Length: 65
Image 1 (cartoon, helix red, strand yellow):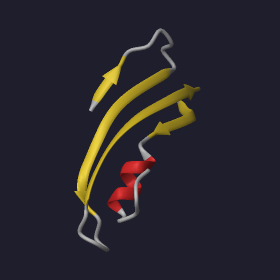
Image 2 (cartoon, helix red, strand yellow):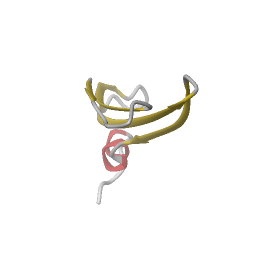
Image 3 (tube, helix red, strand yellow):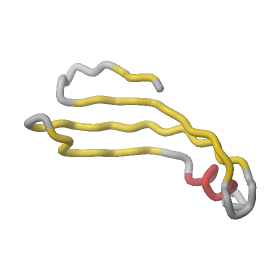
Image 4 (cartoon, one colour):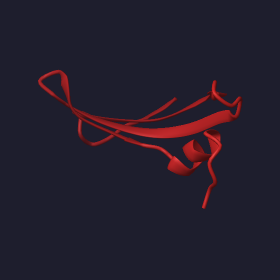
């Protein structure tokens, strides 16, 4: 995981990844994520996460574009 600093002390950004296997078909699952969290009054107020849906589809055994 890599945490990125921002000019806004209430915003956190992290790049992280996971690896594993899909239980249903044994395919590898390798995914990278970018997560953005904004805090207000010490609680998460907004959460956004970005990932590659084509990699997800491939892991499930579907066709990629």
